Image 1: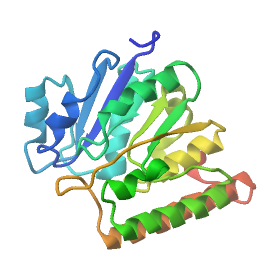
Image 2: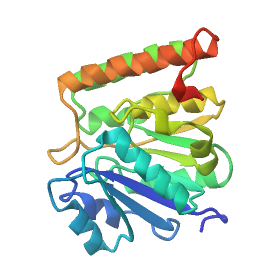
Image 3: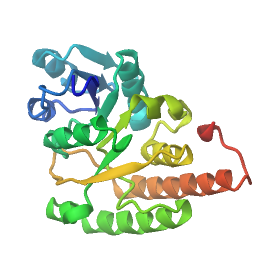
Length: 246
């Protein structure tokens, strides 16, 4: 344990057999206590690779539940295992597990209850090959969301983030979407509960095996992010009530 904190890394996986091993092997197990792999009805050998690697906690969805649905299983399992710090890492090797030490240090010392790894800080996104249209959309969405929510994050859209058990238990993440907008709804819930979020610069990689969504789904996702931000604003102003903020 790190400073008497149980650290659990959760891996929301879908067809990640080609990259799971290289991701897993870079996890710093001197400070990470448990790994949870949640397979969202993959069509490849993700589960078999996970078993071969010796991952003890594998949750397999018989039917695909979506990216958000996958994370719900991740966090519920991590809390069931008594995790104090829960780090969500994509097993597609787009984000480096080598940042886990820094993330755990920030949280273990009690500085921040939430840490997200930003691809925008340090220009990591473009250096790593992020398509220009996604970069522009990311910057536009982030700028707009910061205005609506009154925050100053460098991005809301990274898939590499960590939470204390207190945060996970305080927000109603089970009420969130099962799709990709789940991530943004979580951030809105965290800010609504007045938790602070730290950001850490993160290099990233875009390659064939790395997960990504197409232009159409990106557009739907973007509209969903704006909707979540507007709902946050309306809830804060007392003009509406939404289940996700209960």
